[in-house]
Image (cartoon, rainbow, N blue to C red; front, side, top):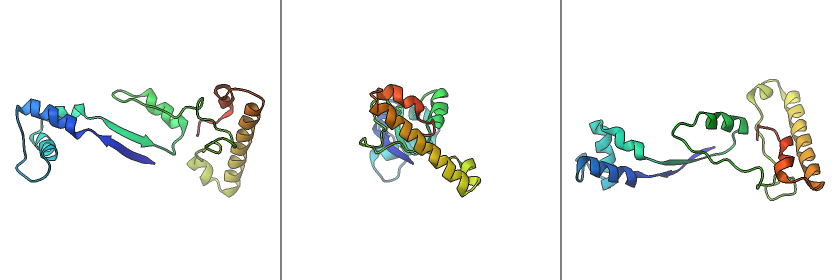
Length: 148
């Protein structure tokens, strides 16, 4: 799942007003900020758009994908759900870990998907056992898959 949580149009408007030294408009209706942004884009002076900040919530992707995204992060910042502070046990608040079944596994048919799900169940059981034995979450998480 991919959701846009925040767009800072007012920041663009402030930068645009500074750039144009006054209220800029495209001559059409709408809020002043919207008109200014349309004017900036229409005039080709888009460097002020570099002041934008977008905040996205990305859910339902694997930690392996997040690892790739954060490895190539020029101009981006990331926050990833903690496996140290968020307990992944079956009896914990979240009720165990979620995982992603790769498309290649799904393509092999129901029997392979069943085997994959059984492996995930086993990993959940292993994590739960370690936590029951008093192993801290930050150490027990080592048995969790990257496809969370």
